[in-house]
Every structure is written in structure tokens, then in C-alpha cells.
Length: 453
Ligand SMILES: [Zn+2]
Image (cartoon, rainbow, N blue to C red; front, side):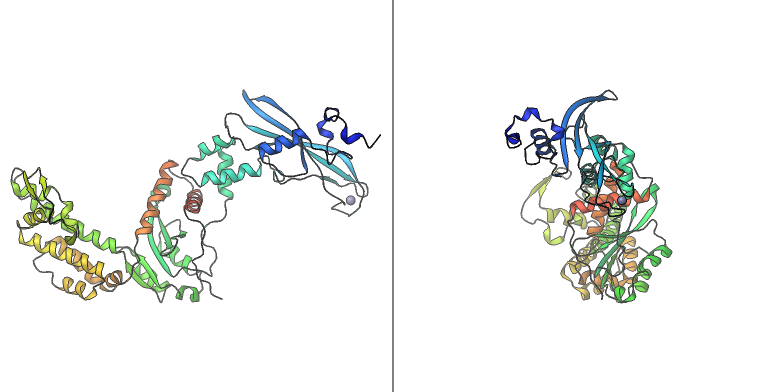
């Protein structure tokens, strides 16, 4: 009689009974199909039913499953005899491809009771954490979504959880910035970022390699920056070779106190930007001396970007029609015409181009020569060069090393975008978590840090 059981028609077995003795090896079609569709592999979860339900005027797909308890002995006293003691029914939100039709799992978790000490134990599954009603898969998906440039509200809507749940997960995201005080990258870059409530935050990134954010402090006070870096052992700090900064930042003395062996580098692009700004101001000043209808005015007013281009890169062959001047000429001729108007402007131009070229060619002596011959320049450019002279050492470093603050500007851009998408953050920690998560997406983790034993 018993031998014929496995060949009996499937319909005679209630789906909830497949896991019972004698049927373990029989394929349960409902369980098989649902597991295939939901991508669930846990053998202790056995699906037996599915249906639609209406909750808060929404149609929900509900899959029902029993969770088998796998305890062999009582976890309290080790007694071997555990008796079945009913089921605990819980609802778990699960992944869904179509957010307008949420998927719930109704898990009937088996409970066992110990005959010896009367302790009750309940079956557990990998699908969901204890005391939790949102599946692990959903949580992982929320984390994946948090790495994208999208609002928390839209993530909540897509995963059929409340926005505060997404917020709570963000709170729990604890893999924040460098807390291991035994590492520091060899090359650092520092700057500030406007963040929560318009406050400036100090930011420090890996100047080379993957440009991973090392730290984003709640403010940019000297006190907090020093306190942060002083947590690193002096041996670790000694290993830092270069620190890239903005020229007008006040971090220079912080860097020299905290990193005794580090060379301060000013951002190359920042130097060039300061000079081009000075040149543009001088150009506009000169332009305003001419009436608007004159050719001189138009020479200075239009095609100003050509003045800022590297001299060598100006086109000397190809003619183009300048509609402001109403004539055909090359880029080189166009610049030449503008500079012929005023000797001071021409000198300013030569100096700017000279320093730009020297920076590019790592010509330190050239830079010094240009800085020492600042006669007959426009007042704006003179002031800029005086600033450069004051910081000569770090300007020269800029021509020596290839590191720049370019990456940090890129990260600044990303942080701005994150804040725009979220319509601003009120919580500093949420901002930091979002930045970290989004950087994870763009930069796969790679270790570029140093280890000191
Ligand atoms: Zn017990």
C-alpha cells in the first residue's frame, strides 16, 4: 500500500503536505513554480497557495508558504524531543517588478516546543530577518536604488515601502568614511563643499588612484580638521607625500602641522583660472574705454575665449569669417589684432601664456622669471602674480607633480547633484551616506591605501 503512494495522482496531496513524511522527494508543482518565479532557493520554505487580496484599495499578490523548523535539539537545554506547536503567521513585503501590484509573502513559521524546559522556538529563514517584515531582497534592492541619483520617495514607491523605511535604512548604513586610522593614501586632495543648510564642509579625497572620498566633516573649522587628522598615528601621517589644495585656502598651515613630510601642491587649473580671471578683468577694463560702435570695442568684446586658449593651439592657417569685424581672418590674427590695441594688455597676455606653458612643460625656472618681471602689466595681473610669489614653493610644486584638484571638483559636482535631486538635505548623515553610496556605484572598491604595521 505504501509502495504505491509516490505514483498516486498529485491532486490527492494537499500542497501543504508535500513536506510531510513520505512526500519529501515528490516535486510540489506550486512550490516549484513560485520559487522559480520569485527566485527563492531556501528548501525550508514551502509554498502551498497563492491568491490576490485587496488592501487599502490596492490589489496585492499573496504567496503563502510554510517555513519548516530545522532544530534537532532544544537551543536552550539541548533536549532532543521537540514537539510541533502550531505556526506563527507573518506578512513579509517582497520584491516586485510592477510596483502597482505589490507582492507579499505570508509565511507560516513552524513553532516547536521543548518537552523538557517548555521553551518555544520558531523557524527562521534567510528570506527575512527576525522581527522584520521587509524581506532581505527588498532591503538589498533599496540599497541598490540608494546608489542611484533618485529621490528617496521614488525608491519607496518602487519597492512598496514607506519613505521613512528608506530613510531608516539610510540611517542604518554604517559603512561611512574612513574610520580605520591605520591607513591614509599617499596623495590627498582637500577642498570644501557646500552642503546641509548652506554650511561649508571640509572634504578630503584620495588624490590619486580611485579618488575615493576619505572624509567629509560636518564643518570646515580648523579645530575639527586638526582633531580628525590627529587621530591618525604620526607614522601614518608621515607617509602622506603630497596634498593638493586651492591657493586661497587656509588649509596650508594645517597640512604642514599634520603631515610633516607632505608637499603642498596648488591646483594647476586653479593657477590658470586665477590668471585668466585677471586677464579678463583687464580686457574688460580696457574695452570700456572705447565707445561701443568702434572696432576696438568689438575686438575686445567678442571671441574673448581665443585669448585664453594656449597660444600654440591657435589656428594660423584656417580662415574664418568674423561677423563682428566683418572680415576673414585666422584665429591667430584675431588675437593679434586685439592685443595691438594696448601694450599693457599685450604684456599681460604674454605673461599669462608664458606661465601657462611653463606649468605645462614643468619649467620651474621659467615660472620664476615670469614672476620676477611683472613690470608693465595690468594691475589685476600684478596682484595675482604677487599672490603667486608669496606662495612660490607650492606654485612650483604644481608644475612638478601631475596631481590636481580636478577630481575633487568632479566630486563637488556630484555632491551638488545629489542635493539637487533630494531637494536639499536636513540631515548631514543622510547626505554623507548618499554620497558614499553613490560613489560606491561609480567606483568599484579598490585598495589604494597604505598599511603601516
Ligand atoms: Zn529545552
